[in-house]
Image (cartoon, rainbow, N blue to C red; front, side, top):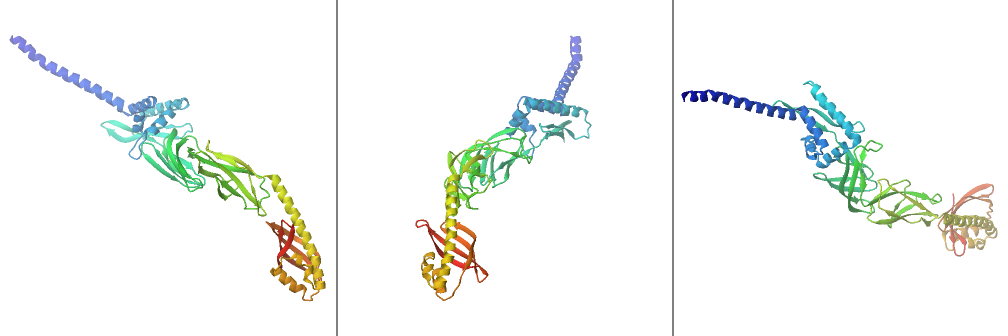
Length: 427
């Protein structure tokens, strides 16, 4: 019995040490597994797996920092982008190179490599963080964000959208305005837009769409706007004869100056509205055809063809030409009858040419009845211009070998088709 007790006592230390050794082995294995999965290489493998498994939360965690958290929408956009066939192959190559750099890198190097987009732009820089958890070195996955803009025309706008938090952006007229920075990928963001400071204002729900790899000529990412709005350019025909600065554009009954090559809008438009252009020749108004403007289907402004009726313009110009020719003949006849009035000292010879009881009538009556014997010759029309029912004529005539230039303003009666002189001065 004593022998059995002695054997039991002698085995106890062995059992205790065996348990200790086994526990140490287990702890060692656990430590190995923890270190293996959380060391620099483990973090690279974990990041790569999260991308392939579309683990948005983990990717958002890896790419967030104290300065800027990556939203789940951004994580989703990035993962969808990377998993496209043309991008996945490049990502695999670059992430494997980073993993190899971790193995080969000496302890003094910080930068370990980068993930790029299809344009060669670095979108994630992988580097040592400088922090250690026990002896596990942490890596930093630093995302590079892209500024995204909206472009307004002759309007201001207020945008409201949500990407994990609410954003409100005020965009100014005729310029690019940043709506924020976004990580790589394609976006289709629900938003509200309120159009202000223009003829047609209002608010609508829609989308802001953009791809961070697609830029304009200035290398900026500009969001496509999909809202209840319209913008357009006018291709105006048969406007050459219209008076300068007389053209107006009429948008849904509201008038403003017409400017060639201008982009009109953005205007709020939840259905359609009409637009046309008016212009004048010698005070007579001409109007183009009407065009209905629907909501924009694309980012570019709509092309709107408007045309004045050339036949109507030609007819009016011909009528004007005939009136001008009559005005010229009227002034030649007046000059001849003026000579008769001076010769006879009798106002009746020119009374039919001058507006009754006007300043001109009183002045000329006094002149011809003053016994002066003026005689004019070689009347020449230097210039003639028409404005509504008024005709201005510059005429040169000779007296005693001296030339006198005078300006006459005639009023044309469309009913009687006759002129009357209403103003006169020598110049």
